[in-house]
Image 1 (spheres, helix red, strand yellow):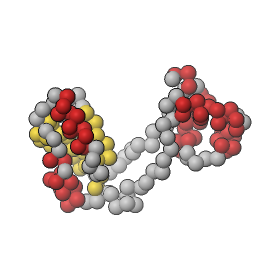
Image 2 (tube, helix red, strand yellow):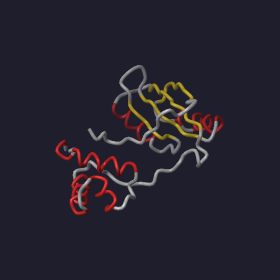
Image 3 (spheres, helix red, strand yellow):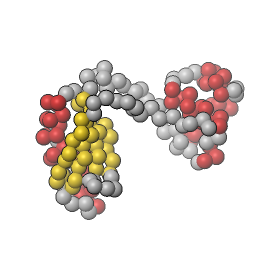
Image 4 (cartoon, rainbow, N blue to C red):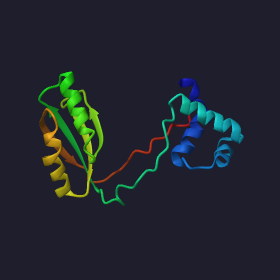
Length: 156
């Protein structure tokens, strides 16, 4: 995989992250190649699984989802079956934007995106607290987004 990450491919990735709908001619001009080699490089990165897809990125703020809360979860059981049951359940909660299993003082960390505090409270009471094996939760309300995900491969 590392051989796919030469300087030119890093430039291609950076440009695609910024604008995946960029015409191939413009992309080729940006990276200093003709269209065919750029198209081949993109195809190679897709085939290798480095580029996994293209999608529309929606604005949560324009959708009214302005309330961001991080929730840490401790489970009552951390055997494999319990973890699988929790994982399956949490994937069904649409307000969960991110979920990570954590090695540390708690078992999972979630990022929830809701309309407001009443919506958040309802999600916690009706969905998160009822997930399999949830023992306890702690919530941390975000006051302001300083950096949000729009990860791009550094060129250097």
